[in-house]
Image 1 (spheres, one colour):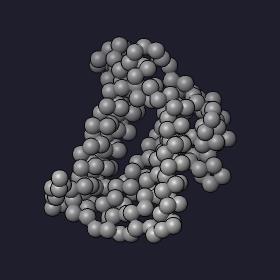
Image 2 (cartoon, rainbow, N blue to C red; image 1 turned 120 degrees about the horizontal axis):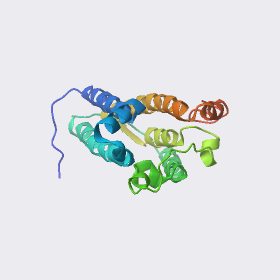
Image 3 (cartoon, one colour; image 1 turned 30 degrees about the horizontal axis):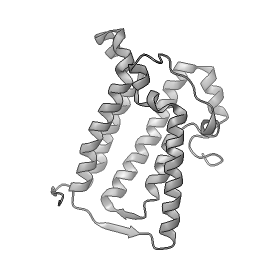
Image 4 (cartoon, rainbow, N blue to C red; image 1 turned 90 degrees about the vertical axis):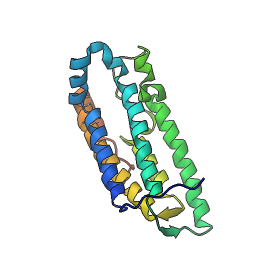
Length: 200
């Protein structure tokens, strides 16, 4: 089935991504969470992470649809054998991304553990890949995205926006974790890399 096109500037893509990032960064803040709990009651806290995960997924779909529907142009395709190498690295990055997710606690990450009352307090994970880098989920997501063998203008704009969102989101996440864990997080941050060990 052919995807319908809409006659909009491609710069709508990073603008829409910026709006997505602002809304989700606001929702992830402790202040917004406390505001909702004040309105809805303390019992709503256990469902907050699950609601956030569902909302994040649903609101991402229009952004992806917009990227597909705006007229596009091809930029480059990595030739063989290099495309096979980048594809192999993508597979490794995807595997490490899944591994990082399960280290975080996949069900806790999406909010199911909290919703079922199996966990109430956030814990600071410093094991596995988290011993080397503070944001492996972001790091391997970016590695996977930017090693795409074929790139178009719209995809480039989307990936650039996602990159900015992940970097800024990671910085906001660090501020949030420092408020929660205090000196324990400050010490952890001082001995780990932001994204890639020995580089950042």
